[in-house]
Amino acid sequence: MINQEREARSCDVLVIGGGPAGSTISTLLAEKGWRVVLLEKERHPRFHIGESLLPMNLPILERLGVLEDVHRIGIIKHAAEFVSGYQEKNKQCFRFRNAFNKHYPYAFEVRRSEFDHLLLKNSISKNVEVCEGIKVTDVEFRPGGQSIVQAISEDGLPSEWQAGFLVDASGRDTLISSKMGWKKKNNKHNSAAIFGHYRNVVRRSGDDEGNISIYWFDHGWFWMIPLRDNIMSVGAVCWPDYLKTRKTSLEEFLMQTVKLCPGVHDRMKEARPAGKVYATGNYSYNSKHLYRKGCLLVGDSGAFIDPVFSSGVFLAMNAACLGAEAIDGALRNPVKEPELMKQYEKMVKRGLRTMSWFIYRFTSPVIHWMFMNPTKKFRMEQAVISMLSGDVFSKSHIRYSLALFRLAYYWFSFIRWRQVLTAYFVRRKAVHQTFAEETLLEKSEQLNI
Image (cartoon, rainbow, N blue to C red; front, side):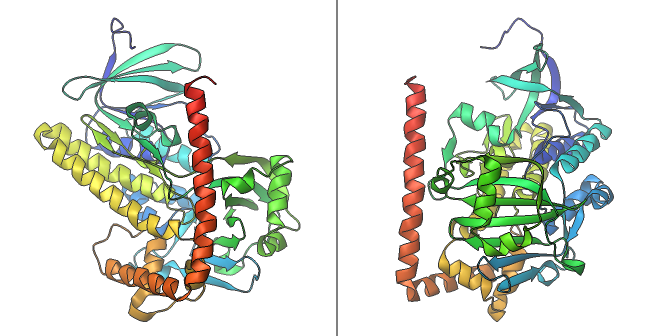
């Protein structure tokens, strides 16, 4: 329990977490005149994955006033290319300039250590009180919507904060969702990843140098994200049961996995490690709710599905923009808080649903075939490019064309039903087996077995 006798410092809004979501919502609320405090458990710069931004990040970066700074630290990305892992020549390049929205024909590839630090420093410049090395240990919700937050510094010093409104931007820590019992593992999708940075990896030429490459292979898919200074981020997203076969170091296992995908292996023949190799467990989870009175969840604290379309940073920063408007309105007119928060939750979940539909089916043979054989009929290819650009909140005709794409998917699935069923049962077996094992492990931990 929180020590009620210690006097708590007060603020209008307290934000937990200093990643892109936390920095963005803090900056926007501070610009609206609110006293904002941000607590970040680590110290920036720090390593983080998720280095590929989307074109729809650009208006947000403009709004924050950091677009030129990101241009300085990043590489321009004109397209996303998808490659059948067994034939390097068999690839499709989806250029952002061909999306419905022509205003943002490119994006950036960035080192997250530099990008996140830049956003955090921008928050400080906008009068956000940023406290690094401070970990939140408990939250108490008071009647009326205020919160008392208890934290501890890396030196062991405790502190308490009283917030008029609380924002959980704690990322995969999912602080509030876990506390409230809202967090649910996604039993529709289950993936894990192993990844690292490498030098001397073959890049595309000319304007395509900054493009992200996605490769399908038997156990999932690879990403290859070019960064500055001859660095390439390389990762494999696989079913967890494949990663459980590892009997060597992470470094050796990643290179063994690379050899299973000829397209990636050919580009990495001269590769040299440029740091540690990391592994992470189940990517996929969501929160039943994104709001309770006086508290809002933004970014990965509310949901994370899969990094295949590089949507994580954009969805987090977009949710932060939507959340800033909702919180500002609620603080100015508390009577409107429930309505504003319901609108926020509806918008965020709509974007997640659009991305999720594609992500859940990405390894299916039909999606593989449709991506490798795009059609301009009914502007379906243009709609897919718009989705890859992050334009999933628009009310334009992208929805009509995406709906037709989904209908085409179901039609081709019907035609290729044997192939689809085989792939479906293999996938479901992997998902349910891992889900059951994790559930059993959690119950054992709760019983101290």
